[in-house]
Image 1: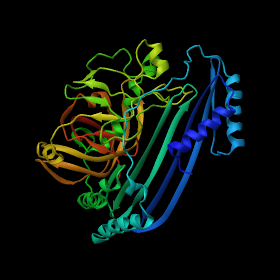
Image 2: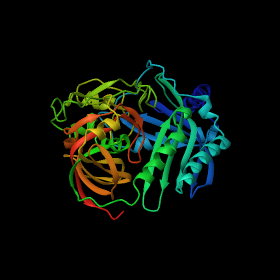
Image 3: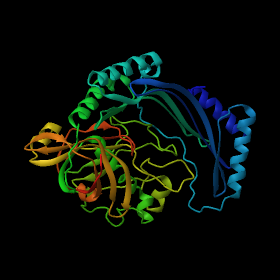
Image 4: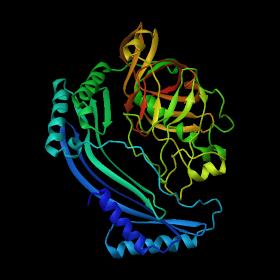
Length: 445
């Protein structure tokens, strides 16, 4: 069953019928996704999955709890309402718990594309076939995925709040493997026509061919050109620190630093769900309208984001960035947009006398949460730059690098683009040229 707005409202009427809590909130949603997976130059899996859920949060005095089900018959709805209230009564009293919000006004966001929702296994297979043909042309081996589908989500409560959102999503990811090298490319979009799978396949193949027989370059500090996917997966460890509760509890690297200039003059970041390259609903996990929030301006930490409870705690206004209650995280900006410039990757390469180009990073872990030092490795296309040109592939590095320090050393940026990696959520970020990026050791491949 795919959730329509009408069906969501019908379900909520049944929730209200059976809920005897002081206040009741219902989150519900459905997904319908299909995936075509390929490896060794052949499709080896095609799957489709449909799912739906109903999650009821009951409030009893200053206590709250949630129970969920994936069954929508009368008995199951009654059971989940009773379970939520029973669990709520067992919780310790929370003096900071707020009443559920009343009706809200939401700005419309259109992210549903019928061509994506209706994409067939045959169409995905034909697209994958062209990627495999590109691999075979140069005796490479292709692996990856092509997925598409749609989702819907709704939040209703007993005080009259109603929020509903649906969108489509597609993803194409491809790795090209040679005997001693590899290349990778990936893109996601609500509109599958924007994926350009053939362009991605050619990019991955070109990287695999250009990085054959990689040479060894000593570890050390280098000027690096980070492609957008590498930028994204590093920044993904930073933005949860922009939550108000994280700062209040002093577990954020921004504790006592809001209002200070801690990044370079050229760093400007906002959270903006309304950006045309972004995804997601116009409301947060509590049903509060999302606001655009300027997070960083000319290197200065300008604002945090706040859920309702955190906003009251810190004597400010909620920004619509809360997660569903109950939770221990509070809030975070999830629609990151970073400013860039019109410089291209080629411009950055031409301006670099000696340096390294990084396609993407993986296996990233946090070493120091307050200095935001991360460690991880490069992969799938790491190149030596000399005299303004890509010269050859190099063996991959392990890095130890502070993201805060990195954002003080950005010399050039490209145009912001919707970017997808493997370690973080999608963002709109540019490629970056960064000086003194710290590679701590070499790998054998």
